[in-house]
Amino acid sequence: MLDELEPEVVLVYGSMPRQIFEGLENRARFVNYPDWITYKKAGGH
Image (cartoon, rainbow, N blue to C red; front, side):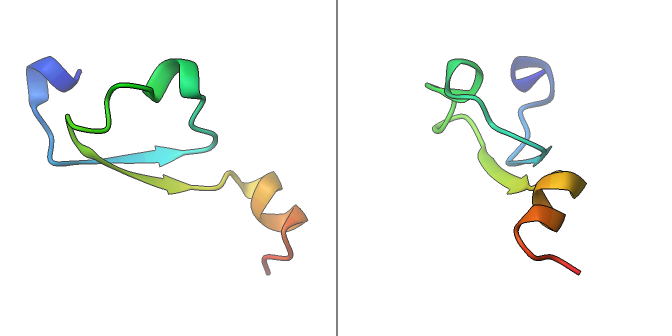
């Protein structure tokens, strides 16, 4: 996807496992949003 679309920003819903995202930091800016369960466990309303 990064090769085809060449995005500047990628929105990631949920976890960002190192084995998937490692080495991609220079390809785009990744903005992480916690999934609903993680958000609620952290005290989100």
